[in-house]
Image (cartoon, rainbow, N blue to C red):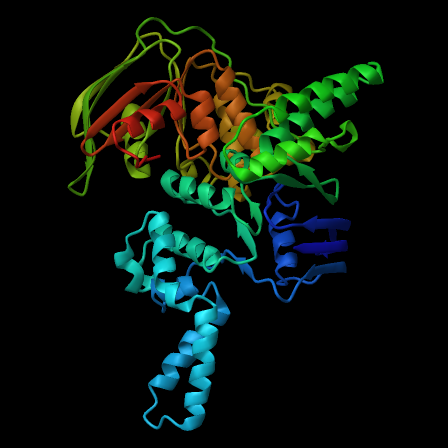
Length: 536
């Protein structure tokens, strides 16, 4: 359990939050959300003692062990994977090392024997004899082979390092687990395993994530950093988001009778209380939601960008025909013999390795040539493209955001351009900011502003949610869902794959899989064929 009393924190003269009183209890998973810069990671650092509060206290029992997902991926390069995982329980690892050093001594004394017996007792009490097998189970659950246990961390690829550090944070059943963006760079199979691991975990879990599907599946509560404060709400992210939006609408409609507001809010609560879920945590959450009062629902100050695409003209019958496309890199096939036709209104999720998917988009946009095969766009098609790497659009460019947008617009007036930029939360003096100093998220919002200028009837987007916060990801999701034209896209955001896609095409070195339906349908199809591993 974690008790927070009167917590206040100032950073660089800026007040992030003040007078916070919260209690985190075992058996619950708390999703920490807030706009970029609100202080999510800072809050976790205060809980684990890495930072000291300006005022107030964080209380954790000495008997409880806390584990934190490490962010420095190079800190363990000189250690084996096995040692790195077991270091998740520092006391156990220290006992193991001291034991090894004692038994390696040439002049083993009686005192050494007494100390060794004490260490053996502590080692057994902490389940030390199962440490290797427990570490192996975690590694394999995250999709790695146990063969890497004795490999040096420095020899691993970055995605594998991330998995090892997650295994480290989970090792030894800690009482409290703090996870800051655990799904970043994690493949869908590892993410699903982590969801299952956390869903019924006995301890206290706090997680910062931009993955809405992950937050929905594991969280019993949402902790919202907003209005310079931190408040806790019962339910997962979807419940928090829907209730927050509903409260905002109610606040804007002050002329309605209070009784009508309360009735609508209570109907909303009842609808979510009836949701079914397999996890023990979700059952407990529903019981809490049943007791929820209208006054406890959230109202957020966060601003959501508006992303909406309008077609200047509808597409004709012929959209895109692909015949036998293949592409290799350095002699290794990325995708082979990809053939399909796009139907009017299709919203197609392209899944596969990141390199293969990006190469596929570049072929469709004629930035690269295929090794084999052909493709043909319909004569009525107009395209807007969101590349995975937008560096070329901003590198060595000192234009302001306003002048940068002017490059792509037929209407050159400042009023018109400000209208598009305002939708993406660029207002007032911010439109004069040079584009070469923008953050990753700001560049992505510029790219969407650019796309909305064109009035295209086909949108191609390769990983459009990278660098975005939850609010912007939600806006992208809603914009693509409402678009009346065709969409061909890739994403690591499970929620977007599931709510936007009407068709999923997986491209691999061995061939392709083409299924109508959303991403859940695609996953079930592969399971029915005995293929549990999903590439996204």
